[in-house]
Length: 283
Image 1 (cartoon, rainbow, N blue to C red):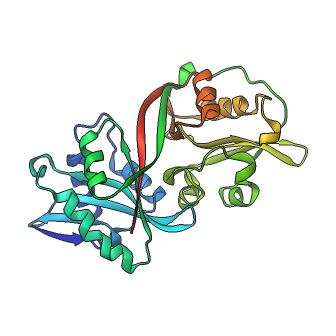
Image 2 (image 1 turned 135 degrees about the vertical axis):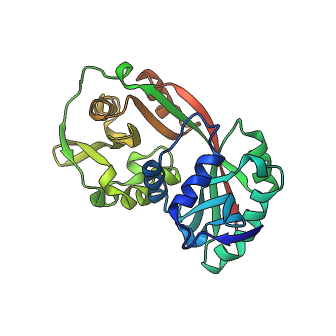
Image 3 (image 1 turned 180 degrees about the vertical axis):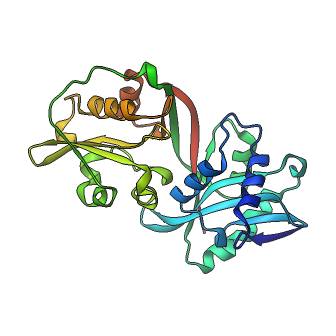
């Protein structure tokens, strides 16, 4: 067996390995969904690596490359090993192999998220000197249980993805920094997938929501701190839910310590489906 980058490897081979590695997971992705996910997360095959047994991928790490909190970052968008090859330390070997290549490309940190209940994976990452930086909740709920009568005031406008970064003052809207998959860069990598609506009071943006109608995922929802308690978030969520083409609505990576957002989502009928750790390693 040998470790090589995924540069030039046919995507069908990557998809086959991904499907086999995660075949026992509750949520399965088809080829188009995996392509969409990897694009949004900045997948770079040249800085992603796999263990090959002859020509077959048996373990892999799919890295996204971008910036996180101002620093050049690699993001582990998926690490998996085929069942019959587990317990051989292949994931650890892949991480250790990849670090020098990431450093050569001036990558300063390695970021990932892991389900808290996956204690074996958490232990591996801790041994690799990843530190827990935050805890996230993620929510899933049937669309039919979320639609409510719209209320509140203010005019709606559609916002283009390329306008969002210029319109939003994070200190005025955010209670916590978005995760890798929910940040501005992720939205800008795949703008055609998102719809963005803003509520205005005159010329002042009072709230906005970024969502993916196809998947039902709400990526960002935030209200100007000077305009809260006016049902603006409820209106935004109602529109996103109503326009969703999916049976389920999902909100990923809500910081567990953000009481205001978690309380709002629960009051809106969302249910916590699970919890994750965000983990970071300086390289």
